[in-house]
Image (cartoon, rainbow, N blue to C red):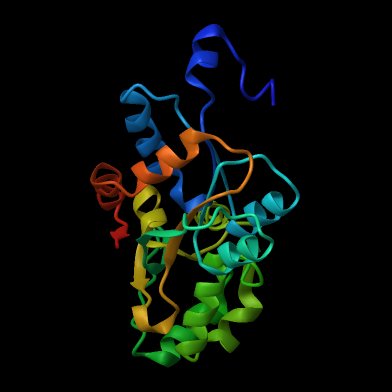
Length: 245
């Protein structure tokens, strides 16, 4: 902890920065929110990004953090069931959309209404996506493909990545010709393009949830949680393409 939070006289007087464990797809938006928070005279939050499943396991193992921002409700439920969430602090931050991407130079096109063509394209693979067994983006992706009747064609070609940004990176590098990511991930990457958006009704609503953790107690954590939900915080989410609720 001493290495993570070097303490000088000024910082001792101001406390310590909040530690935020957040879903990998939130990198750009949370970094901007953190910058805006720091510009108001606060200590800039320490941000750590990974798959929501990985972060939940770290919290269960005792990782010191103040806030957890998950890309779904299930991993928040898991942490809450362990008694690790401060009561009354759970709140929905934003929503997102799910898309199929390809490298920007790809000529691939897709219309979900043409199931035969869609099955042929997905069946050719590989398809990079976050691990459907545990990672929210992967779960949403599998649910969507099942709803569209395309999971049987796609499943053998799925390359399971540790999180949604790792899946995005595989497509960016040309290691996979197709990928399933959030719309905001595709927006943040210049070397991919969206070839199809999944129908919203084909998967559970993509819901980002923030909670304050029981320990360690840090007033700055609650203050930053409230700022995330403020009009200023919400405006940043909107600017990055998230749906604010």
